[in-house]
Image 1 (tube, rainbow, N blue to C red):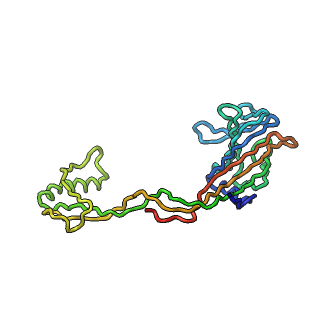
Image 2: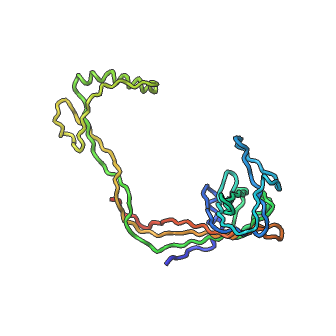
Image 3: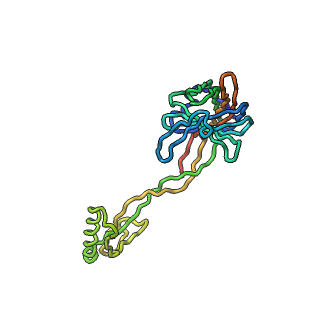
Amino acid sequence: MKQRIFAGLGIAAMMAFLAGCDEIKFNGSLGVNEVISFSQVKSLPGSGQVVEWEFNKASGDVVLNPGQFPTKIIMGKSGSNKTLKLEVANANPATVINLKFDKNIDIPENFTLTAAQLGQNFDLTGTLVTTVERSPEQSGNEYCTYQYPQTVCRSSVKDAETALALKPVEADLAKFGQNGGFPGQIPNVPNPQFYQYPGQYPGQFNNPGYTPNCYTVWQDRPGNMYVRYYNETTFRDINAGFVQGEKSLANYKGRASSTERIYTYQGQCR
């Protein structure tokens, strides 16, 4: 049975995501009681500048008529602002509404964002409650990767004829490296032979004129490991009203959830 370990967390735990770039996505329903108008923000094409469209100007407002609509709200951060993005499924595609407020304004468990803070003609007030549930501990085997050492041996060319043939190549490579490379030119290499003996060690080479050069490389290999863990699921429930004076223009109820696996033991990957 799942255990609820926290309920009604305060502002520090609930809104930590707004200090960074994380987002919280709510799924819920928006009930519009009266016609509501949202003033939006527009970017000037190619300028990188952002300007506010005027209130009560049809081309600059998003207007919602009364009704009940499935709605997603995405809470996040952009630059110096915290953001609320509404995706209202009153049409196809959904109507997108962007609200923003200063990054220094917090949203506690009981919150009110004023019309002045939002740049709108309504207040946004409500509750944001967080609960966390923990599953029973589970165990099993999981896929993993580990590194395995392998010895690789290559021979060094010792005969005078090959060494002489390599001298101009070495000179070209040195010049190539000093000049940062020749555009469109690759140094001429006469394809000298190098012998590789995987798994062999010094003393196992009997080829006259060649001396082995061995070293260790680490290779990734697939494996399995035994683990014990529990799942921790965080639920955030929001209930917010869009209020203008004594009028309730709209109300939103939604929930966000995320699950994290918490390991209590991790065995050796093999």
